[in-house]
Amino acid sequence: MLDKKGIAQRIAKEVKDGYYVNLGIGIPTLVANFVRDDIEVEFQSENGILGMGPFPTEDEVDADLINAGKQTITARPGASFFDSAMSFGMIRGQHVDLTILGAMEVAQDGNIANWKIPGKMVKGMGGAMDLVGSAQNIIVAMMHTNKAGKSKLLKSCTLPLTGVKCVTKIVTNLAVLDIVDGKFKLLERAPGVSVEEIKKATEGDLIVEGDIPEMVL
Amino acid sequence: MITKTVNNVTEALDGVEDGMTFMLGGFGLCGIPENSISELSKRNIKYITCISNNAGVDDFGLGLLLKKNQIKKMISSYVGENAEFERQMLSGELEVDLIPQGTLAERCRAAQNGIPAFFTPAGYGTEVAEGKEERDFDGKPHILEEAFKADFAFVKAWKGDKAGNLIFKGTARNFNAVMSGAAKITVAEVEELVEPGELDPNFIHIPGVFVQRIYQGDNYEKRIEQRTVRES
Image (cartoon, rainbow over all chains, first blue to last red; front, side, top):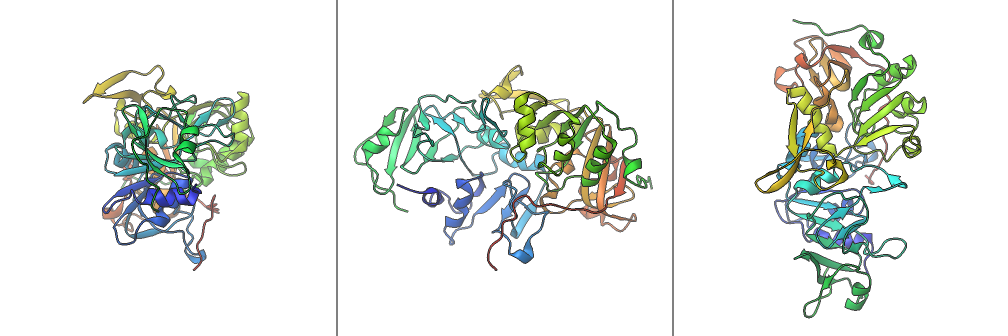
């Protein structure tokens, strides 16, 4: 079974040379730490920077330079700043190659819910609806089950939706799955996790074809 | 040259009244119009509708106005950092319209640019789309979103000149640039106000035509929400 870092590490392998990537808050933010350093990748943060660098040293901290998670950051050589409309122009216009975000629920039809629990938690969707509404290549990073132990990979979402038919790949602490023909297709198992365990933790329909390899991190 | 300078924040907010709709720039606490917000708090302007990506934190930014119940309605995309906000929203004291961040930005830009409405895929199939016109383009569904209408836009820039030209710094540009000129009156506060000619016209982000009033703010706190550092 993977921890959050492990999920990020596995997702980093999906990041290809020449990609512009938008990372959501939480596990996705960690992906930047695991991207191979022999490829060229630029990270976009939707509050208005392309070419996001690592966290600053104490001396470099600048209140006018943050990411979408409101953390202080730095700008890499070749970075650019822009306003919020242009930032979402990049996203809506499909100039960003890969979007990685978290979710509360994903359904086998590719629907995703990650912004609201009616009556309990309403933080807002931020940029998530714009991202999932336009991006071609979306990977969801999340735990396979919620804190109560219930599956987050469902036949259909129960929470208010963020987007419809948009998720293509999911990486959890247990598995890597694609959404194929309205079902979850199991591609890889996390180290030490059996197919049975994954079946048990997946409420939606699961396609298991042949031997399922263990992930290579 | 057409001069946009006003002497101070008091003059800058002349004409502000209860019940108006305001746009406020900033993302989180980054680039918020600190001086204009303080003045709104001081004047105790009430029943305000605020168009702002976030709602500040409990004791800073728009949180100052929330605490005094000055805000009737918030139009935002993400409000996770403010406990008082969540309390007022869940209890029904505060009206809240949550909309996708890109749609929020584009509705500002549309207002700034004289576009009454536009189609976007963001929010299709979700509760955001309820009651909105839907239309397919190239086989993909979109929803119709309208330009905002606001009485004042309060923005903050790094540098500005007396002609109202603005330059922003880093990620503090965010909504400040798209809200400039998107309301009937745009009030810009700047960290450094200079004479015309001192800013290189090649590097102006917002031309002065979008700004009605400009003043130099003071005592900028520029608070950081998530100070995150690495070992040097």
